[in-house]
Image 1 (spheres, one colour):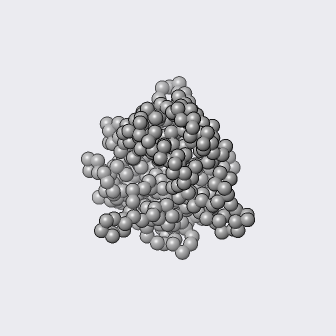
Image 2: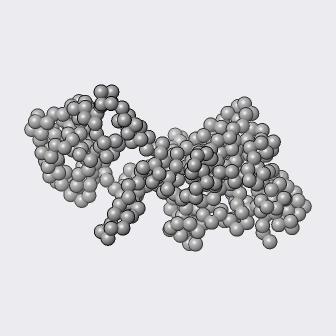
Image 3: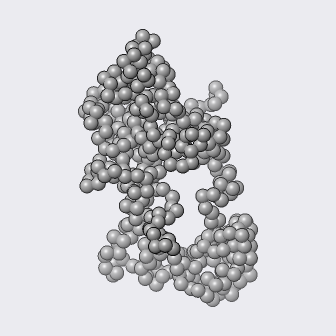
Length: 414
């Protein structure tokens, strides 16, 4: 960043991240925007570095991505001197994140009352699997549990009759931290304006359910009588199954095979459907099946579907995408997680951080600053990599105190 560039958006914000595994992503949204995130770890380090796959030169991609641009300090919190370091960090921070089972800090004596004694305007956010309340509060869990709970992952059965987990994007473990970051930033904004801190918590399961709100709320709406809740006018007011299940019989909004892949056709508005028919020289299709003005998927019309199946096989995916732009009718590519990174739109929107910078190719935060660049992140730290730096530069401890803390094994280094 040049001397005349504005500071990062969250310059001067300090977050103490007391988390293990995936919940650490909550503070990544802050570190990506320039906040000083200090990851407090046990002496042995967060075992996130060994979790899941791939393992890149001995370190998990999960760690490399989740903890980029953060500092790490190891503290033995069973050691009174170690607890003193942690309390000093909290006293000078904007926020502290508890990313494990609810009440982890309170069980160590760092209750909300104690946190506010240390820092009256501290913002606390707990992020856990099922939240700090409810019958599942203490239930052990892992990543996709929140998505199966939220009704997002239907089980599959293989040819041998075994039930399998299908390929599916993880929702709760990604959206939970994102919503937590939104709440944490709101809390910091108020605290800086008023001096009033706040205590909040978010469950990754809640986040998964919230992302499925349309299906859940549709099912609730369908419990009411059909005289009150109907389907869409284009469907003759017949109720469709909720969410994407209601797209299965769609025709003008459906996936079709191209000559080299698949595309998603989305001409549910009459104007787009007309543009398409004219451009493929099939005005007869529009004249026979003009459809409704809005939200008409020609549900169950196999005559149109057969015609469209044959039409879409005549061009490559790239040709159909150019057709979409030229003709003004919505057509999208259908990729998987492997092929999409070769797409020109992906390459344009996600200039990847290189291996040399972060240890693995990584996607940047999907936020564009006009006339500015996001801060360049640093590689995820090794456990305790910044012990001396944090003690001296952040907390202002002198050499004598740092040495005394090390001799007392407050950092777990001996």
